[in-house]
Image 1 (cartoon, rainbow, N blue to C red):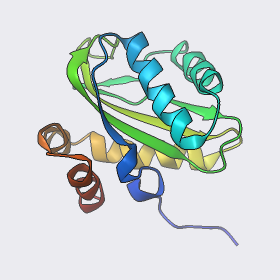
Image 2 (cartoon, helix red, strand yellow):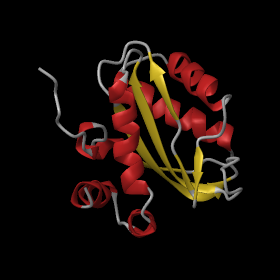
Image 3 (spheres, rainbow, N blue to C red):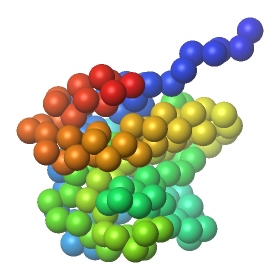
Length: 154
């Protein structure tokens, strides 16, 4: 029997996975994202950084309008994991529109994630392609407010 349940943000992101970061560059941003993800997933930072770097080498994951969605399959994961970061100051990211990034949604998926990988990315991309949702995230008081917004706008 095929599981036809549509993935929602709550399947990927938890309130503790919504953070504020003060990175000054894309490299520093990746180090911070990797550190936070490794801590929550109990996986080696090097494993996650290598996977993200390999994916980013294929082309920037900066999707435009101040949003980036770095993503990669990672050995040892059993389900998709997301981390949403608001940056204190935008950083240069080589995004498709050339603009700096201030919202970053990290998506890590199981190595053999297949369709689940696409579903996880699509689920979060749908939320973040709305300028209204992004503006509300930027203006939100805290992670619980952002989490509620992600669920409500689903």
